[in-house]
Image (tube, rainbow, N blue to C red; front, side):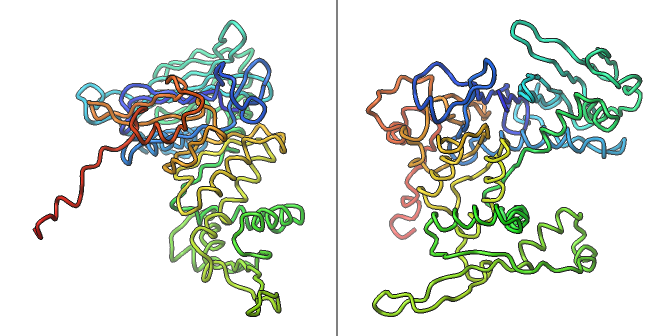
Length: 421
């Protein structure tokens, strides 16, 4: 479970910002939106709001880089650049490293892990076990100098000699069977990141789950309850010969699987046919890709990832969660996480523009972050809990009235063309 994520000097982010899943002491939606993990009280969902170009996506990009470095950096050859980009609008930060850190709980143990890096090298890296009153370093790294607690970080003897300057030691330790590293690696590998404007790549996850009888039933029920006009849905046969496509597209096997699932595997939706009196007289099958709406396709593409997260207590990172789908469907997705019917420890971190989802009946104040740029053109965040909000005042009204910040100040575009000019 994620406790917090912190990032600094990355793209539009200058000074470190913190996205915190630790619940505050407010008394709102305790039974639905908060769960306990040992002595920690954690939020199930956090939503980020802000103007276009404010930096919401950059925060999610930062988490993806953080995660991908853990999962993929051992694949880097010695000359491969690290995929970080500092804040370029300040002379000091242009040459300084980017900073990433998170605190998380795995199997009732809490860890704090982070690193600093520029394009060429990891300058610092640290992994600590967090206890009630102390934080115990499992290893510390400055450049290529390592301090390792071999009693706690076992099987790591001499591994520092196998770690290139552009590779994370945690990733090397996973490859060489260090138990703690393998546990942490597996947790990060379970995190799903969804791009709300480019979601077809997640269809293979839903398709795979549809081939399981129990998941097929659950997904069909969700499709029906989403009021999409679909009576039932199923997956057709997948193409078998992929070699030609791999050669032509130059894609990896994983990307090719998603491409083929999205474009070539038929998703069949069953619909009722009515007479003029509204009586069902027949059924007809449509191809989702060819005849489905963009919103319906998005919901199908992501429902497998969301369902698996809720069942398996996973973390989901979701950019543009509200894109192409109705407000009520977006709220329904959030209630999959914030709910009492399903006992889950799944978590959702999402960027959103739909202010109707900023609903005090759905969210606590500490679940809403407002993202905007300051006078240095750098991204900043503030949690809504820091504002005094009257209980009867809707969050969205105050937000749109500019009382919280994080809104665009758009001039009248019509004036540009006035008088026929």
